Image 1 (cartoon, rainbow, N blue to C red):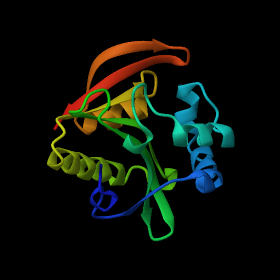
Image 2 (image 1 turned 180 degrees about the vertical axis):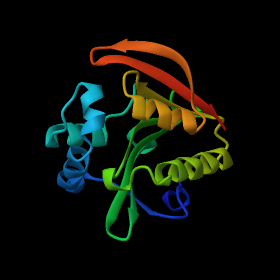
Image 3 (image 1 turned 45 degrees about the vertical axis):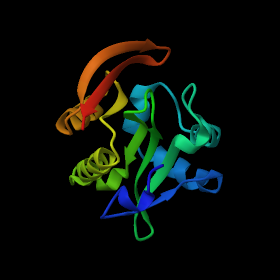
Image 4 (image 1 turned 90 degrees about the vertical axis):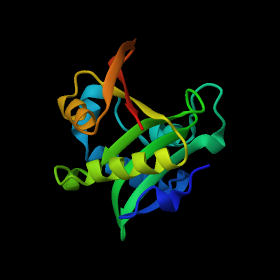
Length: 166
């Protein structure tokens, strides 16, 4: 079980819940580039679904759908799964920066701190999926030390499975 207070030294991290759905939707709607590539449009229903969905054979207590806050400003959101697909791995199902704060190295700082903390907990690697056609996302994850290990075809397009060894 992760300690949310240790996911970031710079930002207050808290669980996001159903009561945050409207704020999350507004946050996501401001990031139209992501949605141009993923084949989905943000909706309240999609947000509520994403807040609760877990990968196969994963319990709800392994899911950390969290927001990173600077005061009252939502800086980033992340869906993090502990122990998926195996006990040595964490999976980032979703990560999105506040569009107004992109390009300032804040996302990189959050990911670096997260990886340091995950390593301290004994995890060995972090996995995530990247939309193959999204150049901004590909550049961000490569810059943060994630390497593509394989491609997977999905209904919405090709996803690159990437990993970072801790």
